[in-house]
Image (cartoon, rainbow, N blue to C red; front, side, top):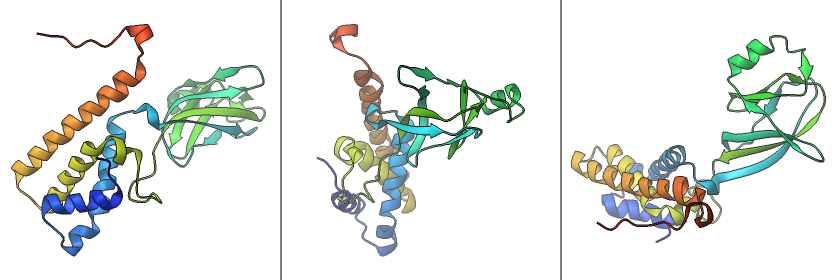
Length: 214
């Protein structure tokens, strides 16, 4: 079944048989923590996004989007082509271009911090950019309609991950936590198969998927 924030919250209370006020007030935290675990464990193609921006002349930094998690590619865009920048370490760019006044068409980029990229060399003009990146979707706990992609498509992972944190909060029995952890890993494995396997291949290139019969 697909979860809404309301039905998932109720399910956590039912599984734990706990409606105590402090526990209930922390359920949204259990859910958000689980969402983060899932998003940082699997790169699901559904959470890829493209956005355009502008690199400003003499400014070696480019701001990341507010929902940014990690990059796939960064390109300079003109009327006829894409020029993809090479992702390097910050130290590489600093060593190659020690003087920020050294300007030119950027060739390299690196995640400087969670809020910005650093470019090398420093842009000598304004450029249009296209960033392809992995983004953090809105949490089911804050969405306006109380739904989310994970709530609809990753029900088991979201439920069992939340129950793990719920039982840890309750200082619950280790065997119960172990059981929910095993269920969570099974659910994560299924998502990985979908995200890292099925969604990245097609029958034309790899042939139809086959199940080995013993």
